[in-house]
Image 1 (tube, rainbow, N blue to C red):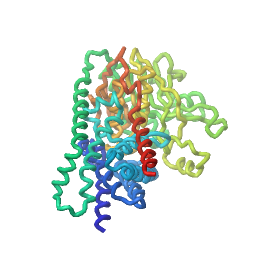
Image 2: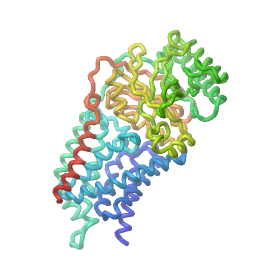
Image 3: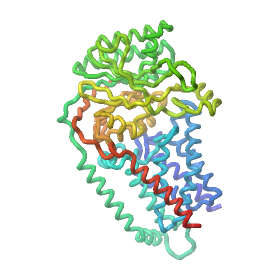
Length: 534
């Protein structure tokens, strides 16, 4: 009974420590210091559990972590929180045995084996159709500017490894307290003895940490002397998908009103940016196929409004074309898109420059298994989902020397997307997002915490135009230099530095090589351990 109580306490403390460092409903901006101790309970617990019970505890841990951490998904749809929590429950039901195996196979010979497996898992969980970056350890440090500069060398995976190393070290120091027999030694003497045994690793970590801080102070730059382009970011404080034609007209009126006010106050504006699907009616489709008079009228009103301004507009829209669908027949192919309109050039008829979202949100924007699991696909379609086709090109727009990519919403949570844009020639990132559906400040800060790293990794500025927050400007150091209040109508005038002739960062060139190395090392450790045991 005592063992069960201790194991249960470790399990639930682990769940709490997973959520606390990151932005959450507990504390909207997160408590990053706690991240250095977040996984002590996990590393100790997986050593204590039997092979029969370790998958069960992993299942509960995964479900618990994401129910607490992404509780805002329940606002979107009950199925959202169910799918994510169950997905991570299943993942941890596999990860916990891997952590136990790493300890059982190597123990004190390679006490860092668990740490290597954990670092590999953090990288691998972001891969594939269901890849999800929410909860990666490094993102808890989004406000610590001098600590996060190292990510332009090693990506978020290198920083996550440095942070989680502390948990692995303390787990090794404290584990004998959970596994000791009567020895006559006091708790403090046991801890001192183990700290002494592992002091070399502690000193090595301190040296690396100091190098990170020194690099952070040296690499932070001042961008005041660069030429700038002024952007106006519009925040409507509405979820554009709620309602029909009347709601779309209301939102267009709001977009026009806020834009006019912003341009009146900032006549030197170079570009106007509206959020993701800020205008829902399919602009190109309804202009070409005028089967819905009310929506065509809205499109016509929008296009004449844009053409009356002498400024390029970046707009989020549902773009639809005719072609062969995924099921093989002719039909409508829809994309979550960004449209760039240049007044007097490509507004009427609407022939904008286009970007189609490449990495769609799993289950709510994209489900590639409709033929294999038709019932699940039908269930998803009956929910509040918008199924799109993924694009395949990282389009870089050019407005008077400002070369920018436009990751849409979820896309700026992935390092490889930002890197792909910069390698294609972008010197800035413009994110269009809609998190209004979540009605959660924690959700919006979680999204922002990841977006910050796209600037740092590639040393480019970012701006975010969002439906309800967090609309902001991020400099190439990852500092949020201006931000609108959330959950209100707002506009933000942003000066975007135009960086020319800049060398690429190590991350831009090499990408997620640290995550790949950890993954290879984890596989080698587990296979070599099995061979050694036999």
